[in-house]
Picture (cartoon, rainbow over the protein chains, first blue to last red):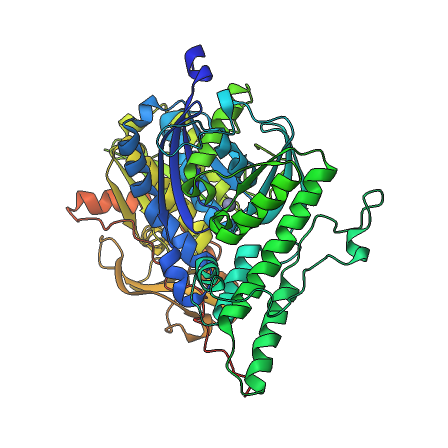
Length: 369
Length: 223
Ligand SMILES: [Zn+2]
């Protein structure tokens, strides 16, 4: 890599941690293409992502997705300065496909390979600047705001992060201790007979329901978990959604046992309110107590209208600036991997080589391997 | 002709096979364990190329074992082979992984007119196939590959690690009781098939088992 390339490196990013096979290409902080092939349709009849089916789909989708990305960006493998790949966290078998393909690309082309953290990549995507599909905002001149937090909500994760440096200082403030929020949506949607994926179905139906008709529990909000600002409890910024899912099931059963019609729209609205209320209240609390003044919302559930609305309201009353990238960059994709790879190169961080192992539970403190 | 062969259906292995080299094998490597493919395969191939002093441009075609084998490991080799073939713009073919052991049997003093090759399929099962040998011919696949319990195999000598593990219930050949599919043999098999004018199949994996996913049944109503 010559000097001009380390200033604006052309980076190809590969993502395969769940059910999206993504290849993205960026030059510096400019997005050139974000190509995604999803196996979501193959999971519909199971009501959730089946790891083995996702892995098989990654294997067959990878080369065509790569080919399409190169074509769309109008570049060749020779032009690329470096390759970046998600090495965790994620589904072990799914990660393996992307990692093996990325290593093979590195061996075939001699280009350096960066093994990066998927969660941090969700934040890195915000550094892409305007233009087609760009985020147009957060990362002015490729710099992140100083007191930045990230709230990631999807079928695979529910986390709040604090980012002091995107390349080497990221901290997990809180996370779900059981199901991810998106998973809870899928399970409840199945319970209510609304199909898969559950998020959009529940969001839509909730608009017709009365969220106050039923009150579902907010997990981990009791004082013994929360503690106080001075003496934080063990799960002050953590979430739990398995109890909520059980409460919804119990509620449906009670209506059925009484021989009454199940008020599906009300249940959907009340469930959604419980999820969104507890996510946003804890996220904003974490921001306030950690001096976070800018919050990035990422992950597929960022598409949820009520989550966007309530996060926006609560952030603005707490004086926090909320940033939401365009949806195709919120869901899992290769552009975010390339965007983070580009930051690592510009920060002069060494590549990972080709001998690392993917790590399905890679901690967020490991930005690159 | 120079072939890069890869197989990760059991252990991770790769080899460079040339019709110019003595015995055909230019360079090869194979791991012993069956669970670290993602770490060792790419560095292994990198070293293989460096040791042989060849680059992607020198390779004429790539052959990958398409299983059967444990899924995650199997995919690591196929993903690697497909990506290398794309990046180097080389043709890619797939061979059934048990063929590698069958060729070794055919070339050994243990050769039999009819035999089985078996590897470990975990969950108390084996992947297996039946071969026949005619004079100075390549082994011919006559049945399989299948996945099933070792105790239900046809009554024939069994070659390969799948026989070794279940030596108590099958007629396992001792010499081959720990033999795993190896890229060097697979590549030699491919070279021989090509020399005989055969067409090689594509790299579609032979999973033999469906994913474990169950379509959820209807929810039980309370009443
Ligand atoms: Zn994600």
